[in-house]
Length: 131
Image 1: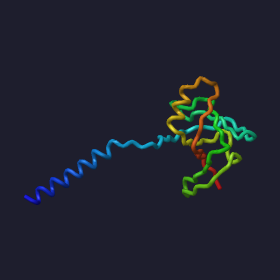
Image 2: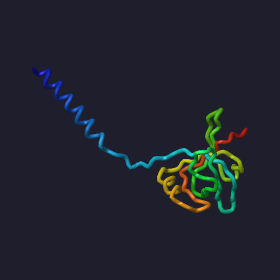
Image 3: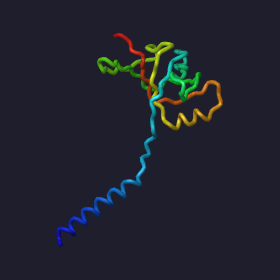
Image 4: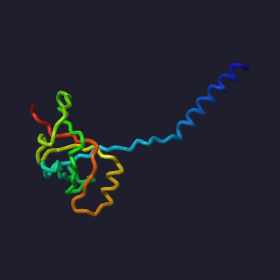
């Protein structure tokens, strides 16, 4: 009888814990990796213009990105080495991977501007360079 009570108590605690934890939501925003291609570089203002690299992209053909405050990195896919880069390391035609919050993408889709500006968390150079 005592074993059944202990077993029932354990099951109750497990179920209670699962139910209590399932209702919690995180406040962390969803971030997405978006593939793009650089179409223009304004080194003086530290702004790049990008376009979607695929047909079903979210950036369009003229999306402005302010590179003055975001971290920029390069990952060598062969060696897995990651290094910090600057705007001087980027070239027109480079493929990049942008880390963007989902809320920024939603705001971008609401805009009607010809050249929309989007806030980016990080830029990664996807084009591989021989170093």
